[in-house]
Length: 353
Image (tube, rainbow, N blue to C red; front, side):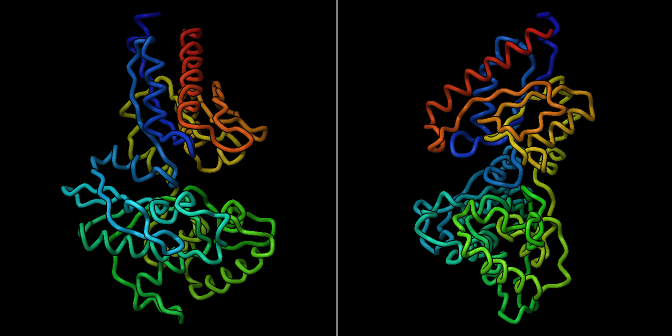
């Protein structure tokens, strides 16, 4: 068995555990616990188009981090500025929308989504273009605190109230990476950008107001048709208006990583919550699909495993119970529990060889 383990390729490719551990930290912790197996271990921090997408791209594309002044969705200066990633040789830039529009940057209980704007992302983008003169820009769309359909973003680029695109700033090629495939608006009961609005603090009384605003905004651009329009509170729609190509983030990163060249015998992945959304474009779901199509067993680790999680196609699933009723656990507790779960994964692998 020991000889077989030494030739086994184990790919560790998790997403972040939101609110506790980054994808890079999760990868490192799991790898440490698998060392006794003496297998060939490759760490590949992943993302799905939400927070951490730019960092995941930076690992794959050899980028370095830079930080510049920026404001949040309430137009308040961000302490310490906002970061992006750049490869000066290839003139490629990677940005997370959440770097300036993230919910963690504001107190959601102290403001309504109606008072927030995606304008700072447009300004952030223009400042980066001026500083770097990139030939290609990646934008992770998810993880925003806004639900303005990206109207603020477009205003920063020169959009006027009449809906004219003729005044928009000319941008380099942009690839938008989405964490969900939902429309900007949809019939009541169907998924759309408003599905995620309550998570951003939207009240029941505010939902009809937002719905009307988004319907009116969409009507100004009747030719825009993208399945990712509702991502990032409608930022996917605005990026499409600005000429961006938009695709599912998890799929794009899996393709970019060139998994066949890594020849994994086992894939270990994970995310903060294994639930009904896992199979809808999230990293765990897409890697499970890849593994099943290529006869590679997939092991999933979740910060929690919800009753609605569909474990079909997954060889084994482990929970770290990172989330308490009052919210995320602190870093040290989260780390300790992930160490324990990763140790159980190592035992599971060893017992089946």
